Image (cartoon, rainbow, N blue to C red; front, side, top):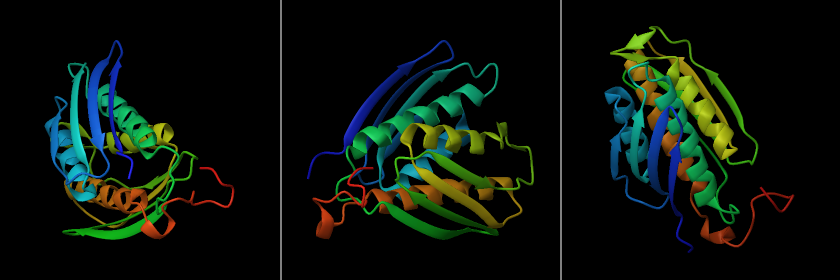
Length: 197
């Protein structure tokens, strides 16, 4: 199987990002973005997706975390798109309903070549620690635009913003892992009647 590992650097006036992603890893991660809560979420994402991930971001966190979180979403999405290549042999689709204490999250993905996000999460708080909870949607929106995937996320239950966001990152990690996995039965096929994704 072709190695599905990619390294990306992206430098702007707002952020300097270095990322390495291995889709066929073991869940190891080293994440340093300047935002502790976001580091925690990315670590959970890698662990539950079984992706090896290194991510460093030197961002304008003296303003807030918006540019850091959004730009990391862009770079992670670019990495997924590049690492997946022509998507030959992947499962393409996956879904899960994942509990995180009182929170219950549904996530479903189609590695479709079309960027679309449905993110219906009524957050019960504007902040968890010093993290603006609205940035959860901004991250996934940046990710799906860059990766060109379709992602649906729903909160079926939940009261605690930390648990809800944690459930989202775990759930999306798991569905991306399943959808990106190679199905040996169809390893030489593009999973589309169009012949391209």
